[in-house]
Amino acid sequence: ALFFSSLLLLVEPEDNIRTLSGAMWLSTATITTVGYGDLTPVTWTGRVITGSLAVIASLYFAMPIGMVGNAFGQVWDDRERLMLHARLRDKVVRSGVTPEELSCLFATCDHDCDGFMSVQDLRDMLRALEIYLSGKQCMKIFDGMDIDEDGKVSFGDLMAIVFPEHRIFATDEGVSPPQINEELEAVDPAVAFV
Image 1 (cartoon, rainbow, N blue to C red):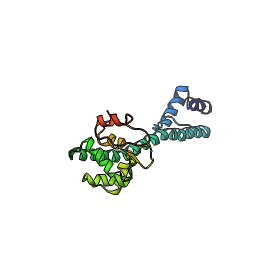
Image 2: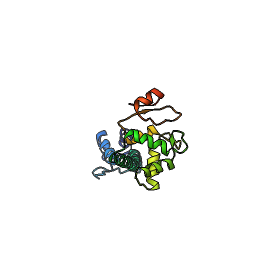
Image 3: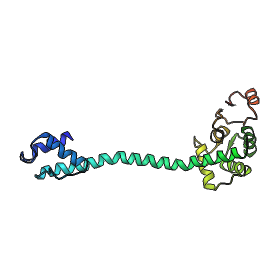
Image 4: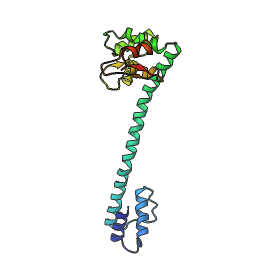
């Protein structure tokens, strides 16, 4: 603003803009797009400078608005996923399923026994829990649990959503769902409830 004010002070006649503070006032009114009209440039050069300042200021203010809008859009998109996770958590808790029972169900629905669930495995598990979601909703839940986007969800990922108060520490090779803490720690210390 000071640069444009200085330019305006140089190109405008002294009877129009007398001081740097007057030029700053014109620049401020232009930047904020208020345009009071009490002070306007009278020369073509002054008008070009003021017009350029208006365009630059609009572009400058548009950038943060775009960033805020983008962040809001991401949060709004994430809202549905979070609501689906909360709904899943609520239905599992209301059905009375314990972490140990969920572990057994995970192992049962893990058809290829690799310690990970595919989308179809997750769908089968949800049906076994009498939780009926659309294919799109099931996919959103799966995508929300599949943080590394490898197309697989571990038991730890499932537990983080359904029972967030429990933590599972797992190796990259996958998780053999625990039956109970003591058995698990005795068999494999790399996987445990906390």
